[in-house]
Length: 98
Image (cartoon, rainbow, N blue to C red; front, side):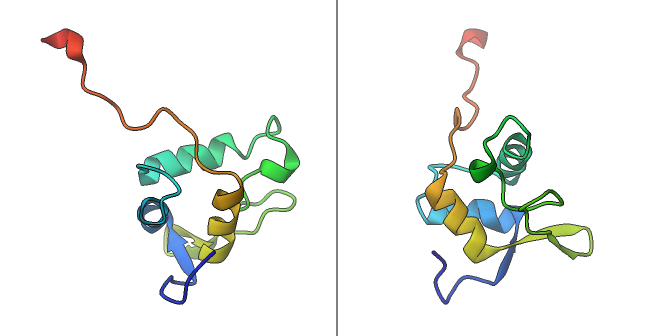
């Protein structure tokens, strides 16, 4: 859940930092979070597990600040606590090049 220090809304960049600070993921980039949002917004994802923000049914619209999409912090954290990020993690250097 959010704490009083958290802003009411976060961008993907700020959310990625927050997710790592909260220990919900070992690492996260804004690009990785956007990928997760896209992947979890599809019809193949069960309705209860779908990304909570967007224009679809049951989704909360993003708050637009210029060209930046903002998400309500409390809802994002609640969603990620229930459905934590999963993935391969950060890219590793190619050891075969040596």
